[in-house]
Image 1 (cartoon, rainbow, N blue to C red):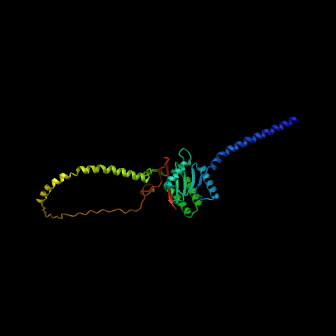
Image 2: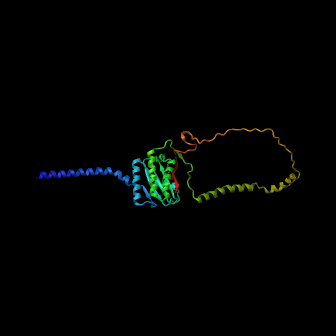
Image 3: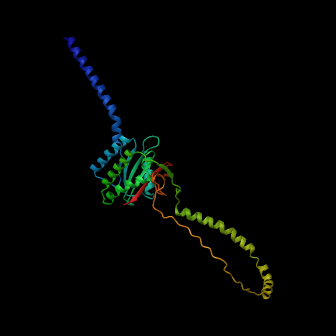
Length: 293
C-alpha cells in the first residue's frame, strides 16, 4: 500500500516538473515576439487617432518590422517648436532610439498639424529603398487623406505604400546625393552683432587713411597751378568718317528637339534613383521629403 502511494506521488512530481519545463520553454519562445509587439511605434502626440485606429496602426507597423527587419513609426504633433519639420523628424527618430541594425535603418512618418505638413524621414538601408522619387509617390498617395482630415487613413496608406516599395527592392541605378546647403543656425542678434563688429573693423582703418590723405594745405597751394593750366587749355574736334567695306552672313540649321530621352531611357536632368541625404543634429545622414496639405 505504501509502495503504491509513493509511486503515485513520484508520478505527480514528474508530471509537475515536465509541465513546468514546458511552460518555461514556451514563455522563452514567446518573449521576443512580445517585446517586438510591445514596442510603441505610434506616437499620437496631436491626438488624431482613436483607440481602435491606434491599435490597428500598431499592428500594421509591427508586421512591417517583423517582415523587413527595418523600423517604421508614425508621429503626430501639434507643433515642431522652432525647428523645421525635417529637423524635428530626424531628431525624434534619433533621440527615440529608433532603427534596426548597426545603421539604425528605418523611417518615420510625421503628420505636423502646426505647419500642416506631411514628412517622411529615412535612415540607413531604408534610404536606399525610399529614393526621392518614391517618397514623392508615397506623399501623393497619402496627401488626399490628410487634406480630408482622415489622418489614420493617411498613415495607413503611407505604411502600405512603403511596404510595396520594400517588395520592389532597391531601384536600379540608386545613388546617394549629399545635400550641400546644410548650415548651423544662428540667432538674429548673433548675426547683427557680427555684422556690427565687421562694419566697425572695416570703417575705422578707412577713416584713418582718408584723414591722412586729405592734404588740405597742399590742395590750397595747388589751386593756382590748376587755374593757370585750365586758362591756357582748349578743345579741338576732328571730323572722322566711317566707310562700309563688306557684309558677310553665315547660316546654320538648328535641329529640332524631338523630346528623345538620354541613355537608359532617362531624359536629360532626370534624378530617378537619387536619394538626397542631409546631416541631422546627431551627425547621422538622413534622407526624406515632405509636402504641405
